[in-house]
Image (cartoon, rainbow, N blue to C red; front, side, top):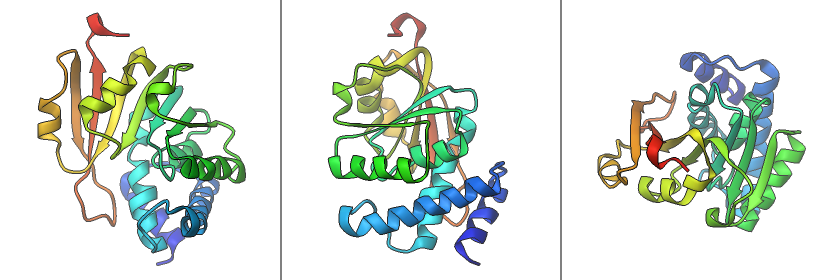
Length: 212
Protein backbone atom coordinates (compact mmCIF):
# COMPACT_ATOMS: atom_id res chain seq x y z
CA UNK A 1 0.00 0.00 0.00
CA UNK A 2 1.42 3.41 -0.95
CA UNK A 3 1.21 6.52 1.24
CA UNK A 4 -1.95 7.80 -0.46
CA UNK A 5 -3.70 4.46 0.06
CA UNK A 6 -2.51 4.27 3.67
CA UNK A 7 -3.93 7.72 4.33
CA UNK A 8 -7.20 7.00 2.52
CA UNK A 9 -7.71 3.71 4.35
CA UNK A 10 -6.94 5.32 7.72
CA UNK A 11 -9.37 8.19 7.10
CA UNK A 12 -12.11 5.73 6.16
CA UNK A 13 -11.41 3.66 9.28
CA UNK A 14 -11.73 6.80 11.40
CA UNK A 15 -15.05 7.69 9.77
CA UNK A 16 -13.87 11.12 8.61
CA UNK A 17 -15.01 12.98 5.48
CA UNK A 18 -11.87 14.36 3.83
CA UNK A 19 -11.96 14.95 0.08
CA UNK A 20 -9.28 13.95 -2.43
CA UNK A 21 -7.78 17.44 -2.81
CA UNK A 22 -7.41 17.73 0.96
CA UNK A 23 -5.80 14.29 1.07
CA UNK A 24 -3.33 15.40 -1.63
CA UNK A 25 -2.51 18.48 0.43
CA UNK A 26 -1.98 16.36 3.56
CA UNK A 27 0.54 14.23 1.65
CA UNK A 28 2.20 17.39 0.28
CA UNK A 29 2.59 18.56 3.90
CA UNK A 30 4.36 15.30 4.77
CA UNK A 31 6.64 15.88 1.77
CA UNK A 32 7.54 19.33 3.09
CA UNK A 33 8.07 17.94 6.58
CA UNK A 34 10.47 15.32 5.24
CA UNK A 35 12.33 17.86 3.08
CA UNK A 36 12.79 20.46 5.83
CA UNK A 37 13.49 17.86 8.49
CA UNK A 38 17.01 17.35 7.17
CA UNK A 39 17.88 20.91 8.14
CA UNK A 40 15.49 21.83 10.92
CA UNK A 41 15.06 18.54 12.82
CA UNK A 42 11.26 18.81 12.97
CA UNK A 43 10.53 15.18 13.74
CA UNK A 44 12.40 12.09 14.91
CA UNK A 45 10.64 10.07 12.22
CA UNK A 46 12.38 9.54 8.90
CA UNK A 47 10.00 7.02 7.34
CA UNK A 48 7.20 8.66 5.35
CA UNK A 49 4.74 5.83 6.02
CA UNK A 50 5.26 6.37 9.77
CA UNK A 51 4.67 10.09 9.26
CA UNK A 52 1.27 9.28 7.74
CA UNK A 53 0.15 7.44 10.86
CA UNK A 54 2.03 9.36 13.57
CA UNK A 55 1.60 12.88 12.16
CA UNK A 56 -1.41 12.90 9.82
CA UNK A 57 -3.86 10.33 11.18
CA UNK A 58 -2.91 11.16 14.77
CA UNK A 59 -3.56 14.87 14.14
CA UNK A 60 -6.85 14.17 12.37
CA UNK A 61 -8.30 12.67 15.58
CA UNK A 62 -8.80 16.32 16.59
CA UNK A 63 -11.32 17.09 13.83
CA UNK A 64 -14.50 15.91 15.63
CA UNK A 65 -13.50 18.01 18.65
CA UNK A 66 -13.34 21.30 16.72
CA UNK A 67 -16.55 20.78 14.73
CA UNK A 68 -18.28 23.92 16.01
CA UNK A 69 -15.21 26.13 16.47
CA UNK A 70 -14.35 29.21 14.43
CA UNK A 71 -10.92 29.94 15.94
CA UNK A 72 -8.21 27.62 17.24
CA UNK A 73 -4.80 28.03 18.84
CA UNK A 74 -2.23 25.23 18.52
CA UNK A 75 0.32 25.74 21.31
CA UNK A 76 3.81 24.30 20.87
CA UNK A 77 2.95 23.45 17.30
CA UNK A 78 6.46 22.23 16.47
CA UNK A 79 6.37 20.75 13.00
CA UNK A 80 2.70 21.67 12.69
CA UNK A 81 0.75 18.93 14.42
CA UNK A 82 -2.14 19.00 14.87
CA UNK A 83 -2.55 22.52 13.46
CA UNK A 84 -1.60 22.11 9.82
CA UNK A 85 -3.56 18.89 9.10
CA UNK A 86 -6.54 20.52 10.85
CA UNK A 87 -6.15 23.69 8.76
CA UNK A 88 -6.08 21.64 5.55
CA UNK A 89 -9.31 19.84 6.43
CA UNK A 90 -11.06 22.87 7.97
CA UNK A 91 -10.30 25.85 5.67
CA UNK A 92 -13.10 27.77 7.43
CA UNK A 93 -11.37 27.48 10.82
CA UNK A 94 -8.96 30.32 11.66
CA UNK A 95 -5.89 28.70 13.21
CA UNK A 96 -2.92 30.25 15.01
CA UNK A 97 0.21 28.10 15.25
CA UNK A 98 2.45 29.08 18.15
CA UNK A 99 5.98 27.89 18.89
CA UNK A 100 8.98 29.39 20.66
CA UNK A 101 11.48 27.74 18.29
CA UNK A 102 12.16 30.13 15.40
CA UNK A 103 13.41 27.36 13.11
CA UNK A 104 10.11 25.55 13.53
CA UNK A 105 8.03 28.69 13.00
CA UNK A 106 10.06 29.39 9.83
CA UNK A 107 9.01 25.97 8.57
CA UNK A 108 5.39 26.54 9.61
CA UNK A 109 5.30 29.85 7.75
CA UNK A 110 6.76 28.26 4.62
CA UNK A 111 4.37 25.31 4.81
CA UNK A 112 1.38 27.66 5.14
CA UNK A 113 2.53 29.55 2.03
CA UNK A 114 3.30 26.48 -0.08
CA UNK A 115 0.09 24.70 0.91
CA UNK A 116 -1.91 27.93 0.40
CA UNK A 117 -3.40 27.82 3.88
CA UNK A 118 -5.05 31.23 4.06
CA UNK A 119 -6.59 30.34 7.43
CA UNK A 120 -3.22 29.93 9.20
CA UNK A 121 -1.31 32.51 11.21
CA UNK A 122 2.12 31.66 12.63
CA UNK A 123 3.38 33.27 15.84
CA UNK A 124 6.95 32.85 17.05
CA UNK A 125 7.45 33.20 20.80
CA UNK A 126 6.46 31.91 24.19
CA UNK A 127 2.79 31.48 24.98
CA UNK A 128 3.00 33.97 27.86
CA UNK A 129 3.91 36.70 25.36
CA UNK A 130 0.72 36.31 23.30
CA UNK A 131 -2.03 38.77 24.19
CA UNK A 132 -3.78 39.79 20.97
CA UNK A 133 -6.19 36.91 20.57
CA UNK A 134 -8.75 34.63 22.16
CA UNK A 135 -9.71 31.27 20.69
CA UNK A 136 -12.76 29.01 20.83
CA UNK A 137 -10.49 26.02 21.33
CA UNK A 138 -6.86 25.73 22.43
CA UNK A 139 -5.08 22.52 21.61
CA UNK A 140 -1.65 20.96 22.01
CA UNK A 141 -0.02 17.64 21.35
CA UNK A 142 2.53 16.58 23.95
CA UNK A 143 3.27 20.23 24.80
CA UNK A 144 3.18 20.32 28.60
CA UNK A 145 1.53 18.89 31.68
CA UNK A 146 -2.19 19.73 31.78
CA UNK A 147 -1.92 22.14 34.74
CA UNK A 148 0.82 24.14 32.97
CA UNK A 149 -1.02 24.01 29.65
CA UNK A 150 -4.22 25.54 31.04
CA UNK A 151 -2.35 27.93 33.34
CA UNK A 152 -0.24 29.39 30.55
CA UNK A 153 -3.12 29.75 28.09
CA UNK A 154 -6.18 30.65 30.21
CA UNK A 155 -6.06 34.30 29.12
CA UNK A 156 -6.20 33.20 25.47
CA UNK A 157 -9.38 31.15 25.82
CA UNK A 158 -12.79 32.66 25.09
CA UNK A 159 -15.16 32.57 28.10
CA UNK A 160 -17.21 29.79 26.51
CA UNK A 161 -14.19 28.06 24.97
CA UNK A 162 -12.43 24.83 25.87
CA UNK A 163 -9.10 23.08 25.78
CA UNK A 164 -8.54 19.92 23.71
CA UNK A 165 -5.32 18.34 24.99
CA UNK A 166 -3.94 15.43 22.97
CA UNK A 167 -2.26 12.91 25.25
CA UNK A 168 -0.72 9.45 25.05
CA UNK A 169 -1.55 7.23 28.02
CA UNK A 170 -4.48 8.20 30.24
CA UNK A 171 -3.13 11.17 32.27
CA UNK A 172 -4.47 10.21 35.73
CA UNK A 173 -1.78 12.08 37.69
CA UNK A 174 -1.92 15.20 35.52
CA UNK A 175 -5.69 15.40 35.95
CA UNK A 176 -5.28 15.09 39.73
CA UNK A 177 -2.94 18.12 39.70
CA UNK A 178 -5.32 20.42 37.81
CA UNK A 179 -6.43 23.59 39.64
CA UNK A 180 -9.91 23.60 41.16
CA UNK A 181 -11.33 26.06 38.65
CA UNK A 182 -10.73 23.63 35.76
CA UNK A 183 -13.33 21.00 34.93
CA UNK A 184 -12.51 17.84 33.00
CA UNK A 185 -15.48 17.53 30.67
CA UNK A 186 -14.40 14.18 29.26
CA UNK A 187 -11.43 11.99 28.41
CA UNK A 188 -11.90 9.95 25.24
CA UNK A 189 -9.81 6.96 24.21
CA UNK A 190 -8.79 7.42 20.58
CA UNK A 191 -8.02 4.86 17.90
CA UNK A 192 -5.38 5.87 15.37
CA UNK A 193 -5.04 3.39 12.48
CA UNK A 194 -1.55 1.92 12.05
CA UNK A 195 -0.42 3.47 15.33
CA UNK A 196 0.32 0.96 18.06
CA UNK A 197 0.20 3.34 20.99
CA UNK A 198 -2.33 4.74 23.44
CA UNK A 199 -3.96 8.07 22.59
CA UNK A 200 -6.44 10.11 24.62
CA UNK A 201 -8.25 13.41 24.10
CA UNK A 202 -8.80 15.49 27.24
CA UNK A 203 -11.50 18.18 27.00
CA UNK A 204 -11.25 20.85 29.71
CA UNK A 205 -13.22 23.97 30.60
CA UNK A 206 -12.96 26.76 33.14
CA UNK A 207 -15.75 26.82 35.70
CA UNK A 208 -18.11 29.71 34.97
CA UNK A 209 -17.17 31.74 38.05
CA UNK A 210 -13.49 31.65 37.13
CA UNK A 211 -13.76 32.23 33.38
CA UNK A 212 -11.36 34.86 32.06
